[in-house]
Amino acid sequence: MTNEYTRVENQKRIRSWLILMGVIFFVVLVALFKDMAEKRAWLSSEPASAQLQELQAAGEPALVYFHSPDCSSCNQVKASLDEVYPVFKNNVTMLDVDVTDMRERDLVERTGVQTTPTLLLVDAGGNVKLIVGEISPQDLRSELEALAGGAP
Image (cartoon, rainbow, N blue to C red; front, side, top):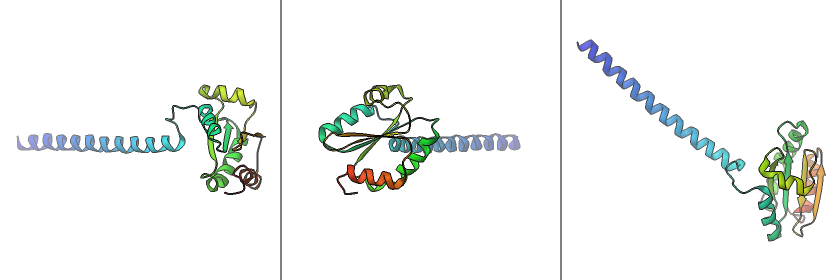
């Protein structure tokens, strides 16, 4: 009887540990997802068109990156952005727009974007410049310097 009792108690202990580990794993997973979602604006309820209008009303320069999931050229532009944009993040706001996202359809149509990758540069005065296709990090740096008024 003591062997049966010990076996049952061990099973209960193991079950308790597995439940505890499952809960800890779930909490860590939720925390990681939330962090990633905030960094990538997955949980942002405000579409990029509204954010762009707010930036234009405030007279702040913006860079809108239009891309699609199956676009190979978008990877090159994303690499250029990852390399160059961090220097300008305090002076230029970047909006990331997936053209397949129906919430962004209005902005895609309003700006006339027909192919990806496309960069929309909006300066503090509201002047707009479209860059379609791949762009080198050096050219992107020059464009962002002009957009930011010369200061990174």
